[in-house]
Image 1 (cartoon, rainbow, N blue to C red):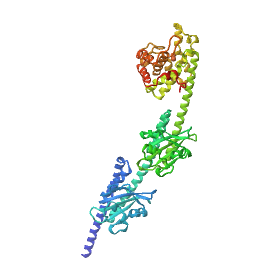
Image 2 (cartoon, rainbow, N blue to C red; image 1 turned 30 degrees about the vertical axis):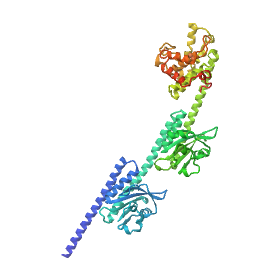
Image 3 (spheres, rainbow, N blue to C red; image 1 turned 180 degrees about the horizontal axis):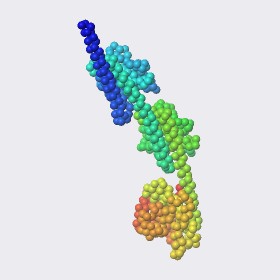
Image 4 (tube, rainbow, N blue to C red; image 1 turned 180 degrees about the vertical axis):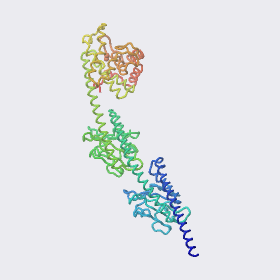
Length: 567
Ligand SMILES: [Fe+2]
Ligand SMILES: [Fe+2]
């Protein structure tokens, strides 16, 4: 009987043990599932790691039925532990706080890679500086397990005080270790993903920036885009481009973005002065982790802009080994620091900026050479037609005034410049005696004279780069109401540059002495133009010209001394 009773008792115990084991396994499985479900939910909903830590801590507290807990991660560089997530009364504001790596239970767990379990926290010597104290909670009992990937400890998970006030049991430790293993894997994967995703995103940004930089030849635009790119690529508060003034050997802020930027534009730095000056002088890139304590740092810009420079990255902009300026980004966002990886990328951007600036410079030089040649050609016409000395350059000046008033783009202005300088180039093909005839022209002579609008396009057609201004040359004698020549075009059919040149041309004819009449005063000539607005001329163009006069751009000086350099 006794024997039977014993075996019955043992069977009951065994059954109970099996039930407990099953329950534990079930609990573990549920925990794993919850963590795994969390992964997908968090990955799709949550972008930042901080939110991920917070989410897992919530799951952990729920599964371990504890009141408070924290996830601490080790910072290998700073040699300390940082609170990545905290939950429980009084834990607000603890995230981001750091504790020395070797301190307390968390420190012990990180150091040894082993779990810590205590059922009586009050008498534990290691518990003194623990999480519970930080949040003002008396720790009755505590579990702390490492977040491990192989032998590498990423940090710890710590939980305090069970809700039912009972001490932790070994199965609680098993459960927490199991969840911690899952969480560690997720953290590691997410970190890796963030790291590589970040790199991929940066490379994409760099590629896009390079394309943007190289899609314009406008120097101003290149510089503006370089600044925007520096700020964006470096994830910084502000970025600037400083160029070297060859004549004075000083650095000046070429473009500075934002309102504050306007104020620092006036600042000039000597070579070697400030961080930018140091980089310009040495040609070496530099990261300054704490600007305020760096002796090279110059406070001029901060004082002018009421800006506080925390950290900065500065790289040289070189064209064919020659430093032409520096690119800098200030204050990495999110309280972070600039890294060596940033420096590599930033230098790459600066090299792209250098190429774009070089291209824009070359384009400008080419454009200047081109305009110089066009100006010389314009002058050549005047050698034939002594009565109209200076006509071409005056038409050029007036056309520029109108173009600016009308808000033409840089490209449109460039075309207008060339068209104005070459508008009468066709006169080269008109006989001298007709060109110089002081009196009225016969019908046949007039026809020859008018032919200059057809000869001009034929001349410039030989130069590919000049073909785009043919419409301006061909139609500068068309009239808005369709009564002009050579094609009797009307209104908007007449290219805008031709409509502008037409006004300039007529104004110059009225305000200069001719063999058969004296010149008119400016105001009278403008009134005449206004009378012809809508019939001979485009009203908006005349209006722009009058505006230029009203703001003082068109005075006696502009008429008697037109710019000698058409560029
Ligand atoms: Fe003409
Ligand atoms: Fe003309």
